[in-house]
Length: 212
Image 1: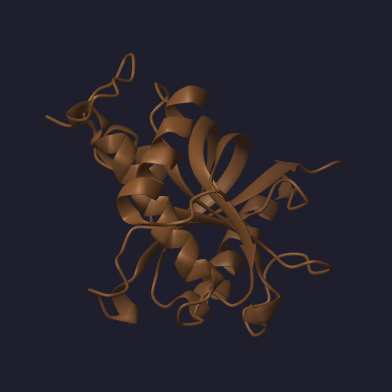
Image 2: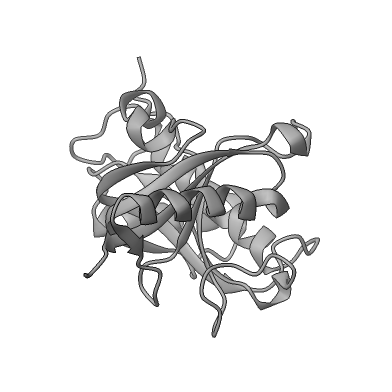
């Protein structure tokens, strides 16, 4: 049976609909940086997703090609994730989506090395006729975070974030959002197949102990 990160690491992908504190280990991702409103039809964000999935599925299906990745095992492609920030704004201003900067990512198994990644990018370009040159291999250690399951449209996320903020203050922590530790979303629902009120998104924020 194919390895499924969502099932094997439920503490990271299936949080409760109430805040919890978690230590996130280092992970490897396919990543693309960009900016602008993610809802723009045919825009930069939509093009980035096409590349991410092309590379992700090239890695997943590599065992059927002539290229063999050492240590490969069959796995389910993890969900799309995104790190979001807006220059000069602490947190997220959902009313001004055009000012977003983002890093969109899909997790990779640890067996994928630099050479394997380079092969996957090249193979995806040839097969899908896409420019995948913006994709890069990202190693990220998020560390101490607060997270919570958000159910509903993305524009209602501030209500969930407010609950997370109150929880960490009550428990002696504070937000540690900065240039390298960012607002993080993990998309558990396909917005093309579910109505907005049923969308499930993991929201994760970096935190640190509050100084006395």
